[in-house]
Amino acid sequence: MFRYCKTLMLGLWLAAVASPASALEVGEPAPDFALPGSDGQTHRLADYRGKQAVVLAWFPKAYTSGCTIECKSLAENGHLIREYDVAYFMASVDPLDKNIGFAESTGADFPLLSDEDKSVARAYGVLHPLGFARRHTVYIGKDGRVLKIDTDVKPATSAEDMAATLGELGVERRAGTEPR
Image (tube, rainbow, N blue to C red; front, side, top):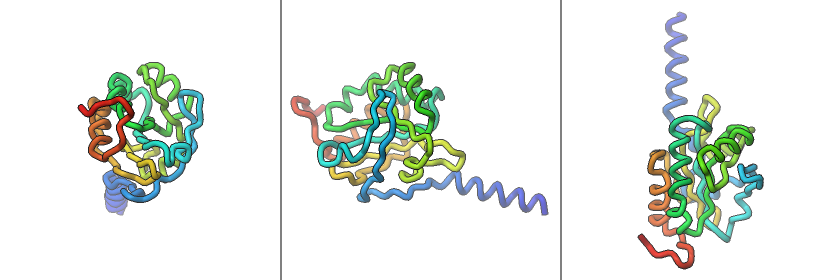
């Protein structure tokens, strides 16, 4: 009996881990959020609606290898993303003070958002059963609707990939920038 229960529990755990909790679908309105950023500001999705596209790059945990690589990619190649009329953020369920230190240590010149109560991660379908955010990037149009959910983020090329995706999605370029 014990072996059966152990096998059943392992199977349920693997199913939970393997299947993304993606309640969010392309074309749907993105859940609103108001999250504190490493820049000392509170960032609200509603502030960008009708004005600018938004990219929300969820990451599992500050100071881990993959997350450090991803954050440095965005910091070092952010100029590629800024060619588009977009506000972009990395977000995790880490405490704000941890994200502030992480932003400083990686040279992030964009805000890292902190969702300590995990409500926004849950609303976006990125909360892993073990309590951290999955590495997913959500692209949100000017109209507030989800344009794309990237579940196959490559940390080392995240900035280049993000810029390419913005181009593919037809996000407006900033005035004075030429296509690559």
